[in-house]
Image (tube, rainbow, N blue to C red; front, side):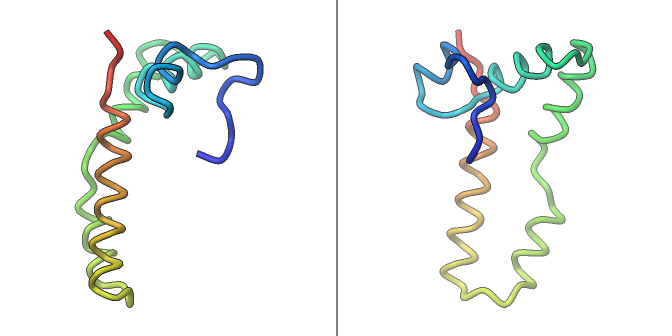
Length: 86
């Protein structure tokens, strides 16, 4: 992400991993006034693997090696979003 979620600090999760995780987006949603249940639903929607995205990548005019890179980057972002700090 190009922008920081919190202007005055980093969360424990960001400090531990160096990138945003579920915890960061959850806390951000809470801070901007979204109900807990709604925050969870929003994040869970982003955590789903998108078959449409795979189709779009496959149909794109990218070179095959770039398609693979794009898929890897997407998978990495999903993995990060699924991380929950214990």
